Every structure is written in structure tokens, then in C-alpha cells.
Image (cartoon, rainbow, N blue to C red; front, top):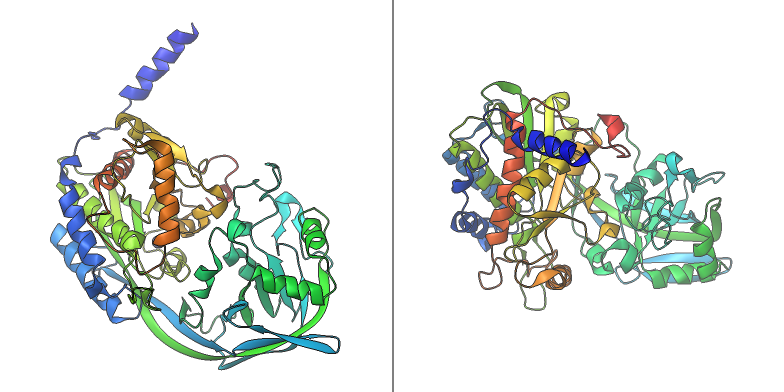
Length: 543
Ligand SMILES: [Zn+2]
């Protein structure tokens, strides 16, 4: 009886194709050579690393607009392919050091080496002057986990010192937050936001390679570089005077001067009921600030649906990268961002072309959105989420790409933040149809679900799917696949060496992944259903 029911449900499942959906339709449009042509171009030195506000932006926008037009996409924002994103570029020049006063004794910490600070304020001069330091554990207020690091603490106008990640990390306890899987509370962006909500004057996160998911050099790369924020003039929004990071060894010095036992204090902070500890240290330093207001741009094209034109499926990817910066050992100063994210941008163009090539016309509207300023804080997608061109209630799904697979064919595809939404079930169905399977993130501690543009869609309730390169290499297996990803983080991530190199790259796997994401969007485009967030997702309430 059981088997019989299973058979019936399988038959129903497989025969239940939405009207008009043909799995093969449009797949022929994908090719390695076409993807490579776009990728090579967008990642070339000519595009200057695609920094928002720069000549690189102008060149990138021109290329995307022209290609959207050639593909036959309709303008996605009224009669324009562009959505203006008003932003402010803040260039903060910090004083070279910070003085720490401990009773009568004082010592200095060296900028760049010991700590990195910047500001989200636009005032010309920012000063910390004998401001109190207070250690606030993880700096987290999470009612659903019954956790409040600020309970009973007065942090107003003080500089808070907090740990990276969340209490679950390294606890071997999956009921403490999400165990080793990072929650949004573990992200530095959250810690800065919470510090501002608490009215702190500043925040310093203690850096640690493993729970942070990257080395201190990633933080240092932001030192003295202009940073972008949304233009919030006329809005009364509080930001901390200084935000930043301190190395672990400098933090140990602070703890020592405060007479606090490093290991004991950190261990106590991992347990519920910890209370913030004033450090009885006063710090002084300053920054001078230049603010420049300008507009960057999201690029939007669409294919209007034939039957449900006011229901939208949005493919997103960020076009920007880091521009021209500090030269590496080889003297290369152009951060080409070939993988991150010329590849996703090229992929978006391939997807658009494939949808245009279909024999059956999609019922729902397909939107192709290349956003700006992801690298600076997901600003292009955040601006879109605050000012959606298409109503969020009418947006069926977001499918985001950030970095395509450069390693050749993989048996699997990685779902980032597995368990979030029913879009994963669509992905599973289509992956199986292509003889592939889904894998969870190999490194859930890094919190990648909060680190690319789909997160801004998720925050406003739109179910968002974010996949990543699989690790089960078709010839060389999983160990090899993992090795490749570790190598990427060590050698190429956010470095001038992230370049397109035909000798190193094999785009066959990327084409497979694009076909898969295409079929997921295509299926949705012929359906009448609305995929939902799964039970337990932190984004369900927003829908
Ligand atoms: Zn990226």
C-alpha cells in the first residue's frame, strides 16, 4: 500500500509540469564561448575594476545597457535601463594611532597594524576624546534566543568592544543560536547596526580569522579607502562616530590593561546571562572626513510576461567590484573581480538571452537586475529594496548570482543557507532532472546567506535563492573541489589576481549552473504558485 501511494505521488509529481513549461526550451542558447566573451570583456583592465562613481562604472553601464538592448530586453525602469542610486562617498582619514589611557599609564595602538576604524558620519571632523571602552560580549540583542548582551549596561556615548560571530560558533551546541552556522547576529554589519541602535559612540570588533571567515588583511584593505553609503540627507538616522576592528593581539593588550582575564572573560561572554564589563580605559583618536555626493546606478531590463505581466521573477547579480587599489606583489593594482562578479554579470546576460530565445513565451515577467555597490555593503540591492521598481508583494522570487563556477563540471550545486525557502525544492527538481544534486554550504560559519544581494530581497520578505559552486568535481571528487575553494579564498578573493585566465578557468560547470538556474526561473515563470519561506526561516514574518 505504501509503495503504491509513493508511486502515485511520484507520478503526480513528475507529470505536474506547469502549462507551457518545456524543460529543454531555451537551453540551446547557453554556450561556454558566449559566456566567456562577456566575462573576458567585463573582467578586462579596460573596465578598471568597476568601482561605483568611477570611469569604470561609466564603461560598465554602457556595456550592460548596450548588451541588454542587443538581447532585446525592455528597459526595466520606465523607459530607462537605469535606476539611480544616490550615495555618499565617505573618505575618512584616521589619525595614525590611538591613545589608550589606563589610570595614569597610557599606551598607543598603531592604526592599520593593530586596528582599523572608519566612520559612517559625514561630519568633517570625528573625534574620540577620552571615551570609555566597554566590553559587550557579542554585541547581540536576540529576543528569540533570549540573549541580550546590553542588558543592564549603559553604553550610550561609549565605545563598545565586541566579539565576532555569535555564541553558537565553536560551541558544539546546535541549539545555541544555530551552532556553527552563522546567524545574521554574527555579521559585522549587524554589530554596527546594533551599536547604533544602542546609542554607542563607537564599536570595535575583535578580529579572529576562523569565526570571521577571513583574515585581518581583508579588513585592512578597507583602510583609508573611500567607502560608499546611501545618501540619507534629510533623514534622521543615527550612526556611530567610529566603527571598526581591532586585531586579537591588540585586544589582548586592552584586556590586560583593563585587568581582565582574556580567556575567562571570553568564555563567560559565550554563556547566557553575561553582563557587559566596563574596561576603565579611555581612548582618543580622530578622523578627518570628506563626503562626496553622487549617484551610482542599478541596471534593469525585463521581458514582460504574456499572461501574468504584473508578477515578477527577479534575477540579480552585482556588477561592481573594488576598482583600482593597493598593488599586489606583482605590481598589479586593478581589482578585476573576474569571478567576483564579472562572472555573475556575464551569467545574467546569458540568462536574459536564453529567456528571449524561448519558443514558449513566459507567463510571468522576468526581470534582470545588475546592482551596484555590493562590495561596499549591498547598497544597490538595499536601495532597490527600499525603492522597489516592482512591488515586493508581486515579486514571486529572487534568484541571485555572485561568482560562477570556474572549475569545470560539478555533480552538485551548493545551496547557500539551505532550509530557507521552497525555491530550494524547485532547484532540487530541476537539478535531479539534469542528473545533479544539491549540497549544503561547505562553510556555513561564514554566513554567506547574509553576504550578497539576495539578502536585501530576503529582508523584505521576497523568497530568495542563492547558490554557489558545487564541490563534487565530476572527475576528481569532493576533496579536490574543497581544495579549489580554499585556494580561491587564499589566492584570489578580493585581490588583483582575481582575473580571467583561460588556462586556469573552465566554464563548462558555470554553463551547467546557469541552465539549472534558468530552468528554476522558467518553471516559476509558467506557474501560478507562490513559493514560500520555510518554517523557521527568519524571513518568513516579513512575507
Ligand atoms: Zn561578490
